[in-house]
Amino acid sequence: MRYHDHEMRIYGGIKLYTGTSTPELAQKIADYLGEPLCGRDIIEFPNENLFVKLHTSVRGQDVYVIQTTASPVHRNLMELLIMIQTLRLDSAARITAVIPYLCYGRSDKKDQPRVPITARLVADMIEVAGADRYMTLDPHAGQIQGFFSIPGDVLTTMHMLIEHVNNRLRPHLHDPVVVAADLGFAKKGRNFAAAVDMPIAFIEKRRLANDAKAQALTLIGDVNRRDVLVIDDEVDTGGSICEAVNLVKAKGARDVYVVFVHPVLSANAAERLSALPVRQFVTTDTVPIPPHKMKFLEGRITILTVAPLLGEVIRRAHEGRSVGEMFNE
Image (cartoon, rainbow, N blue to C red; front, side):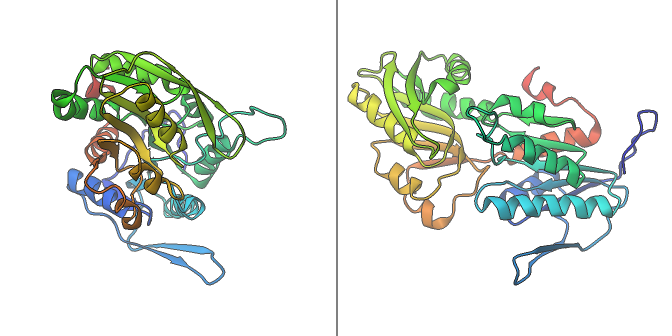
């Protein structure tokens, strides 16, 4: 149901639903809000078609669907879309798609002939399915916000990462420097470095093909005899991080820490990271790390939960309160 501008929006209570992509994070969000996760059945038929059935009615309710869209990407994306449509057909008053990690974030522009802008397609599908609003964390490209016609909260985990660095890592660092893993992360890297009161260095790299491989070329800045925090928004195959770590070590860096938001960790990325001379990895739970990958990183990885952040934003959205106040904005 769509509302005209002159109609009053009246929502019932918060109803939380989740797909199968990130049950632990969804439960933490539910615990933060003091609300239960609502029951639903998600069935995959032998022909791989998905079927969703809600256990109870959501008519007139303020519904939030928590679903990350990491691997298996297309299964998780279809679960999200089908759940949104199911809620719409059951007459939910408002539906918000809570997507900790939004897939296809790198397909944000036509940077060569005859290619799609898949991030825009994903935004369109979420809207057509019936979402009234969306929430996501640290999209790879800021312009993805413009692909949605519905309102949304595009949030960042940088505040939590900065707090962790200042409170847990900073006391142990020697003459530290922040290194942005590529120039595309330069602006966020500068903001991060300013917030932790450290100098910034950059790695210049050039993408060579469409297969996500990249070649690190130059280190802009000084890391010699200094502890280094390599930062990035996500780690996919681990290629960029491997090159960054090896480059700063070759330039004389002491201990290296890797800080990133989304642990996508495709293929053998976790195994590749485990072989690096890195003292500690710091990331979040926007993407769950399965046990067979976690075993390579245990003892050297800290995972910060985004549940309080998303839970508080859900509460404020439900109550019609400012989200910017959380960050003094």
